[in-house]
Length: 132
Image (cartoon, rainbow, N blue to C red; front, side, top):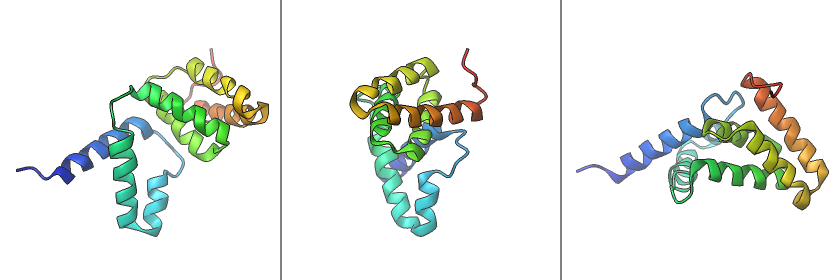
């Protein structure tokens, strides 16, 4: 009989690889782990293995929603991580840019500017800048 924790570990690992492959910056899991390995594992398994792995909405939509929220909240470091994720799950740079610009309505132009700078950095890291 298989251990349900093994299934969750596998789901967590697959989702983390899908979203965060190629991220050069320190990932939150690595930061958490440096403080508390067991808690880091539990947090990661919940957020990545349960919440982000849910297939109620496609990964592309989930990442665009995340980009929108983090843009308005001006959480630039976390936004960079999810910009990678959005590109990794198949969102186009144009779709992501459109979502960021839409956030001017809710967060103002300064948050859009911060998000676009973060996005440019991510695109440069992935060799996708300048946009064509």
